[in-house]
Length: 457
Image (cartoon, rainbow, N blue to C red; front, side, top):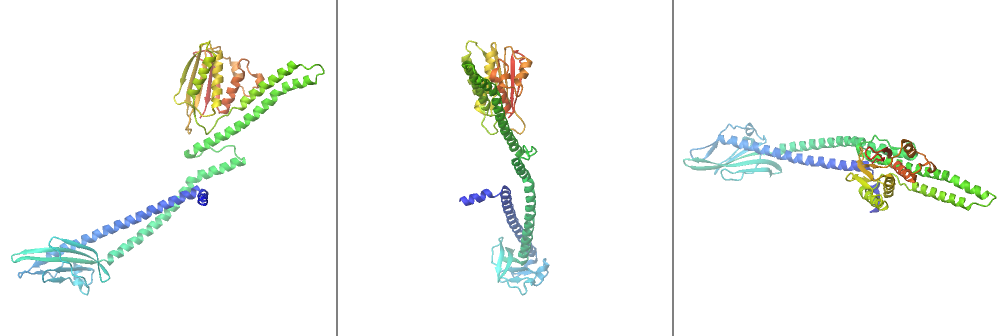
């Protein structure tokens, strides 16, 4: 069983498609051949029956009763082949003491027709006699005369060898054309298969180039069926590069931030005078703060291509309940609008940090009112949705110079705007890790700070 499953796994997608399509095509053409052969037999047999019925009906007018209560047949017959020896069409007429045979039966031995009652017909298809096949139509009739009824039987037989020869010729042509059609369709099918699977081959080549470092991302000109795959793959690559860049940046920032306190401690230790323990303790606390900050930044998980959505309303209400308890004396009024079904596709901790820091700043700086609006964002070729998060307060707001400084890339912790602390830096890192963007304005209605976060799907 394991060996068979291993063989199936190695069976390429192209070979699987070709094999199944070929089998389906051969089965379909085989069924078509069988159905057409059967239909041809039924149709030709029906024509034979109609023809023999016509011969029987044509003979009836040349049969007459005689005065001595017998029957006679005219010499001139309506069917020329009946007057030609061994023509393949043979007629027999039977009465009580009368047995007539057409000239065509000269030298041909046929069995005597069975006697059937008037108005009945019998069709033998085929009638096997002395290793020869015949078709026979027999009809029972009666003449009503002054001297009484004269029953008789009219039978017309046809040699079946012509029928079976035509049937064999039809079969040969039918299956020849079906085989030619099968070969042609298989060739066309192979071309279609190669053309249809070409994007997969190109994707395989792109992945090989990606592995070798020749390209940085997969091309985006694939058919719609592969567009979602390539888009997710490119996003996954961007996520990994982003994580690596953030780790390098975090290590660089940490090294840079620790230089100053380490230099102060080193200088104090080398000082010949008495060591200032307070100064060393202060620098150690500073270093602890720096490490804690950088660890928080490093903990940002970032965009995840494959993850389950987290309902935003649940986490938002949880954070609001907590902040209302902490700031119960301020009696903050929150105006909440969340789009139905809004979900965050990422890490739970990132969502809590993002909403928690923004709302904590809003609670800190507002007079009484906070506006929270969550909208969904849809993009072409993406099955899941993104988010637009807007949080505003009626506090003093943030002037333009500080906004630019807060959003500037590469600003270190010792350069952060006083009063807004580490929180907004973490928010900025989270938004950046999800390939999103952040805007800071003054709210038109509340007049305070207005943060607009856009997180693409």
